[in-house]
Length: 384
Image (cartoon, rainbow, N blue to C red; front, side):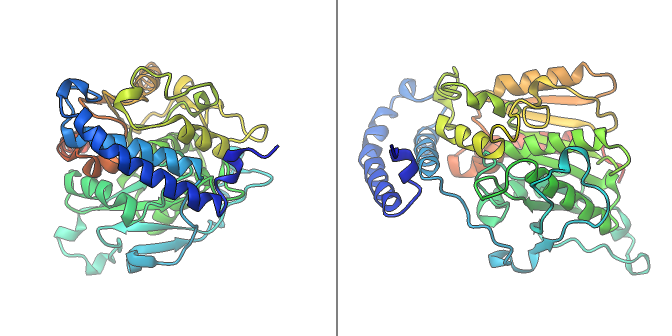
């Protein structure tokens, strides 16, 4: 028997559902405004009225998008990013080993967007004295439960601004990877991790020292950053280690999304915007059974600490986000491994991933303070 859920991603059912959901949300908006006027009735007493409303809208929007399996169309066309977008071909070097050597999923051509401008490594004779200070390159992987997002302006311009504004060096560039998301066919694990390796090798090919590269990722992108660090640790002769890592609300236990009520059963469900249907969609697409084990160390690193000496890690989480407990457990496990350097940072009064959408949700001040703390920590960690 055909289920309603299987019909929703297809027209005309998709269009009917979107129209109905939009009207339903508009009808409920005045009720939410009235409900959240008293501070005591908001998701959390510290939330402003704007934050309470936008969080509720974000939760509804993500629920609807997940029901219809809406996702960006994969394209390597430059788009509005123009010259800041760079297509990248897989490396011909033997860097896709071990877990990346999959019989079905092969390295593919991807892209990335530079912020604020493309990085150009000047020749020694062309450098002025001020330019000789080595640039800091932040290689960032966007969030989106492995099924949403592109790392382009429409979803990462805010986070990239936080990074370039508050990084400890003025000569800072962000390269956001447009990795293959699992909502597209044949893009399950390890496709996205292969793409991170491709992007990292691309930066090395630009003559950027590995110690000047910072690996960064928010939510599912943070998961990819951890997986990348595990990979280069397990394959020590393939790629050099980066100078540091920034993890923003990293999704460290996707395997738990296979359980009943993975979000709605969490005590922080009311103060966050993540939904059951989103995380279930994400993990089933990224780690489909039986091809991939969703509890493997590369998918769910929370309970699988590993040694990564020489790469200091900044691990951020919001005090009101669903993933808080998982992130703390991951960081504490990593701390117990000899020579690991972990900085666990709690952002008070923040839901999940204000790095990515803090501005849109009314958490701009919280996000700016979080980024300032990152910059202060990162100062002195890099060999620049």
